[in-house]
Length: 423
Image (cartoon, helix red, strand yellow):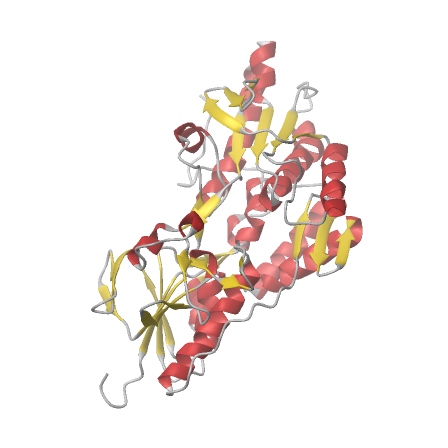
């Protein structure tokens, strides 16, 4: 690089890892370019609340330029990354090529349907804003269709919902969906008999919330059942057809909607930087988060396979944020001629909510459930939101919902913004 010109750091992905990297490089002797195909940072842990009509999209999507703008040595480029040339140190986008001295790749994860085409074509995932809007619109649309349906069997099928996957996302959707139905849609459709409405959670293992302590797993299971969710353990989905789902034991369930939360894998961009990928398409990295053979490239977040103490770290926001800060420190060190440091993850625990007044949290030996766990969940998630405006707006909506049992975002909108009718 020319004398006096700071090295260029290109960061691909404006998720938790990408924003953490850019912020941590603010005082470093570098020029940072952040690239993403969307112009917003998505707070994905609350996608299910958009999908179940509690929050509006703008409350969990923060414009990237609003975050990057105040950082003097950073800029944002809107574009889709189509390839990476490691030899020429160039990122190829659908708009222009961007040269780099250091590269940070953190493009996150995507829904994994494990090659099951029927699941991919006939179920709804929950990994991006389009998924959340589709979920919300399809749930509401099914109720509108059921209002016109006179055939009893078809009416019951339309109002049968199946959530596949007993991890955090699955139980959060199931709990929020049953509350949307009981607290709001029963009032919206007061003239319609909703006694046949059902929400079923299907989990392939013998417990929900696999990473949690058995006591918390049982607590979550009891809470779901108390709220009215039917839970089927040791059961897998084989095929999804129009109006029905076939389970692994051959049982066929009529249903109006299948929500798939049972699998994620790394984004496709992993193959652009590594010829051999780990489980779930993740990119194996060194202890310093550098790509083997290319010390100028860092891979972090859900895309990275980070092994610590013999275990691969999970796809969690805290791992991504800490990885971003470590990558930034190491780039600063390299730019100043110092040696990169090892990444050391500080485990802050895991938590999951099961709807109103109920959550489970596990921090080391500490295990919290019920109302106290729910308050802890609310507090931690508020802290992670990058926009103060969004924090205020979300608190207001949560308070409104808690006081009035009201989910105000009950509008049918497709991802393209047009109304989704039932004609």
